[in-house]
Amino acid sequence: MTPPSRKALVPFVSVQHMMNLVLHIGVEQVLRDLAVEIEADFLRWEQFDKTPRVASHSDVGVIELMPTADADLYGFKYVNGHPKNMKEGLQTVTAFGLLADVHTGYPVLLSEMTLLTALRTAAMSALAARHLAPENATTMAVIGNGAQSEFQCLAFKAVCGITTVRLYDIDAGATEKCARNLVGHGLTVIPCTTPEQALEGAQIITTVTADKKNQTILTDNMVGSGVHINAIGGDCPGKTELHADILRRSTIFVEYPPQTRIEGEIQQLPADHPVVELWQVMASQTKGRTSTAEITLFDSVGFAIEDFSALRYIRDRIKGTPYYVDLDMLADPDDPRDLFGMLHRSA
Image 1 (tube, rainbow, N blue to C red):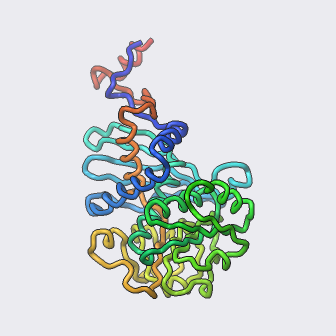
Image 2: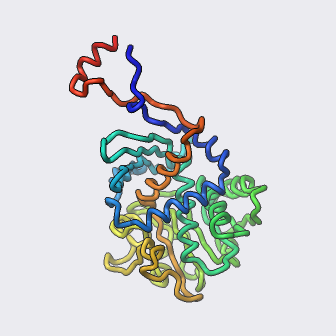
Image 3: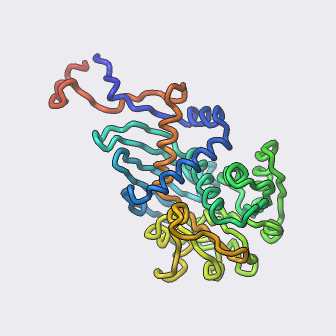
């Protein structure tokens, strides 16, 4: 059998590879690196093909494809969101992604993205807060202490300098898990028994719940002036976390309006409600926070360019390391017209 040519081999990063790579670099350093990569791509926002993610909804969850491309690379992520999975001992979110060479169409990377999505989501949250949160903020409340919570806490520490996190979840076991996992990471961790207690003294509020329904995790009277809200959990139609009155009091920042108006907290508002595109803040085309009393709200749903940035980062970081294997996944005959002949010669 003829061995595959090197140009037909595709680097593959497995879950174990990803864990080893992240631990080798350091979780907080990866979060800082991803924030840098995402911001660099947001600063060239207009160079990307952009489209809302392609979603297939069911009664129990959603399966999505998230594509984007620049002049050289195409990327997509496959991702699901099934809140009921947790009761069955399964992950709510799983994902994998691919990068390809625009000029040849050949894949150049295949990677797990369940862990990578958690990391890039947290990095994106902290990056947005660096532009929008109150100056010198030190304390964050985290409402919802599931699989994403520790990543959020460490990202805000690494990127924004947060020193204290106040945790609350309707499941006390989730809060206990999060607090336990954060031991030794240089944060003051305060488990709370009510959401109101978690909000005490917090300049940043992160909501990161999973149920696929319209919820009111924060009511209007819970949110005082001057805070930054990092709303992550509302990320598909019919799934929100904040009372609409909070949105009306806030300056709202989004990734890509055509997607966020369908999936984000702002699906509760009229289609013409004003929002600010975050890339424009990063590019100094418009202002972020304008006063100490202002409530800023990052209505985060996740966008394909963030995944593109994360995949590109992984592609570059695995070079010369043992943290990947080559997959023989592309048929590549010596004569590109003779695929049939390659098949018969393989015997």
